[in-house]
Image (tube, rainbow, N blue to C red; front, side):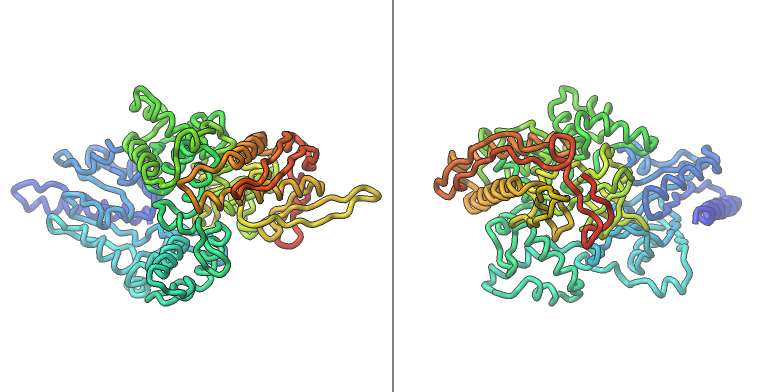
Length: 581
């Protein structure tokens, strides 16, 4: 549509010149507001117009969250005499913002719309036709403060086929939050009705599969039982302002002692604000390198956010810090305020000597984030750029904005967002995770164990698996049993903490937790790390885990530090790939 838009702008300008011939007073050239689907379209058209149009007669301005506040302010300032403003924007200008002096609107009739694919459990961001209501709203931007004219770039036949309104959000997004809210409301009403049945009574009910997906996720998180009863964790999640996954992350962070670090990341990555980076106009490689340097020594998007928030908080000159790392200071201030707000709203025991006793342990923070975000994990396919996600059903690549760079074949990562952008799937907010961190903290319930025969006269081993066998690792039977015992102890302590969150666990449980922290932190990098540390687990005491002994004798097969994870791969649900390891 770019040539059409360019031709329309020239046509509007010729109309203005012709009209001026019959006027005794010169009329200011009206602003042209151009609606485009997204930032990529704005950037492309801006470069095209800058190349083809005279800058003395046309002032081309982008209106988008990625441009600096100074550039945004220019949009609301009057243009010099004889200069016409051309504002390139998205649907943000449909209702949220009024650009004074707008006389003409060019509507591409397209927008980036978020939807949800219940079959792949993936959010999609695709360019689609706008609704009739949006077309009417965009037309209303022309002549809001004076007479105006709107050009829609679609035919009458197409207009008659589009929806009257944008579908309700209930049909376009995952339903975990809605399901939890519905469950709480049903309990308050004294109703025993199932959440799945209740949501189907909505005026525009979501697909049954989408509801089933949300219930399944809440069961995996431990918020609901399989019978859809609210657990102690579920009650907590209903009271939190955070999405369920991040609310669970905060609970684990308090229990394991890295609350401040977790809140720094959650406040920045929780979807409260737009990303804080001011990388518009920078080359892609330059922007990526900037984030990589900020993230050091971590190779992680979450490490990058942690360094951004803590660096901003600790900086003596916060403006200088933001300028150095291309951060929007207003957004950083909002993130910092949100972090303080989340801390204040935490109803759990957040005594610093308990909730922050392991502050600064980034490996622990990674484990805690994975515990909440699980099962959002993916595995790199060999040394390629592709990752297998959603139990091997989806092949995705990293989002272009990531600070994370793959370093090892068959590396496991967790991610906060998997979205479909046009025809490709992208992982966003990605960090590597070790197999031990997944096995000890990921998901609910016991691990699956399966004995495997040895080669020739060799001794057999055990395959430990999760997510219906999609995630598999090989080890010996003794180590598999020890991992299961530690996992059970951690889950018991977590459930006990959810039931009494204002209480600090007893001494025996704290000792067990701190020994588990040492094991989780000993997993040196994405290659895994063996459990080398001998630790005796305290005896049962007021609900504390029973006597455990971590001998450290069992090691995980593979190279690296004794554990690299034997990936069983492509037979059955595991998807593609070889043995790995």
